[in-house]
Length: 419
Image (cartoon, rainbow, N blue to C red; front, side):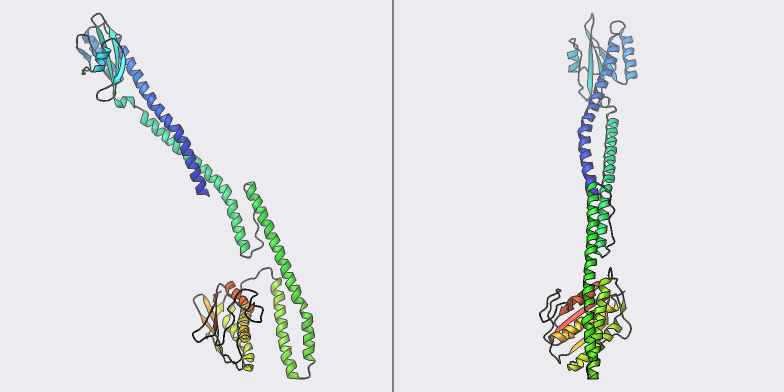
């Protein structure tokens, strides 16, 4: 915007200056010509005043002195055909002036002749003052250069003023853009400072109002989800009591373990939704993946499902919290158990990569539904599992991809950036 406004002002100022300076330049040239002609006429008249009062020698001396003083060639054509002063050829204009008419005419070699006719007893004498082209344009180039410099200065001042005006407009707009980017990045405390023209101040106030409204809506949503999650504790408590009342100790312990896991998940939801903003954490992916695969290996044994785990031999830090990474691994493994028949092999492989780490979960069955849109699923599920994994990878600076290996099945690959 600054450049466009500067170009607009420069173009407008240039057009105005051209409309003013071109006539002024022509006027300066015309004034220089008129001045030179007036000076030459004065010199010719001063010489013409002594014609008839002095002898030819004195007249020639007077003409030469006037030529030296004025810097112009002055010649006097006498009636007898002789020339006093500077020798010169008799031109047609001189013949015309010899008829008793003073005039000015274009000189044969360029310039202008100023001719003054003087009537005498023996005939008409003609005083000629020759003005060269340089005499007619003396001072014109300097005046034109001055006008050009003046025009450039005025254009520069106009561009400078336009730039300052553009800064006064663009600086508040840049501030609004920065605040909007901060809001988009999750910083809901960002607020714009209302400065600049009234329209921009109104936009800043509207953006601040929008940010406040978004913050309030998100707070209400977090509280609502937390309240709903908190209400789950009552049936969980009842379920725990039912599990403890079972007569079979093994069944009671197994059900109690599942209830405890569900309770931890509900607690994690409550804590997560009450946080004002999700902060990116870090964890050792090797330890987290190993722990979650160990947890799911019990179910794999019950279903006679071969489970292969490949982990690096050293810690592998990634830019995701341990809870988020564990939730993503659980979502991928749960989808495999939910959407493939029992006994179908599966593998989990964690390897270092250029961004940080790469987690691959592969099964050999018909595959899980390749739908990552939140809330949609090709099976009898909520459709949130793959979305949780995708969002976890994206929040950690990575991606999620689904593919079909040559032998069939489905491969889900998550990449994570290093912390």
